[in-house]
Image 1 (cartoon, rainbow, N blue to C red):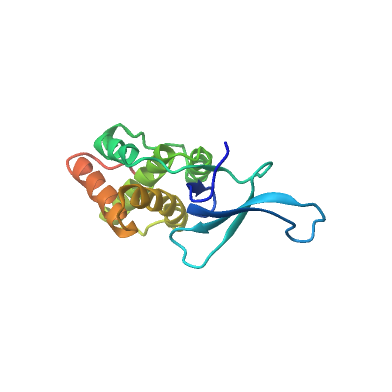
Image 2: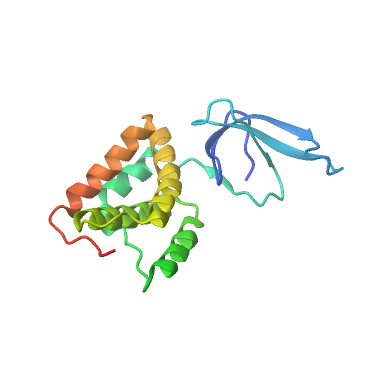
Length: 177
């Protein structure tokens, strides 16, 4: 897909970015010139990201519409929690699902990790470090795109997702950790 200066995209590693320029350049002295999207991450002031327009291993996609996130929130009960027989397998499953690179996939991971976290806290246990790490990565990606699409800040998006999830799980049994 071809993008243009001014377009907002989701960069696989840097989140929501705006294309500021499209330019031919030679990066890192590789000896070959390529055309790059020169992008500014929306939530990282002053940062720049350069991604080849063709042949990049980094994925780009258009930012999801606000309706996508409204639908995710309205149907949060329908989002499947990820389940595996052990924590190592679950962490690998998180990586696989996050690699799908969609808001729905991120919501599935975030929902699963939040429910595990809340269950552990409710049981008087510590939150697992790998769960926190996964929540930081998947949550950042989900909440940044959600905030941008809705014209809100990241804290608002996070609070909205978490409060919606809590409201829908208050009367149900949380998954074990």
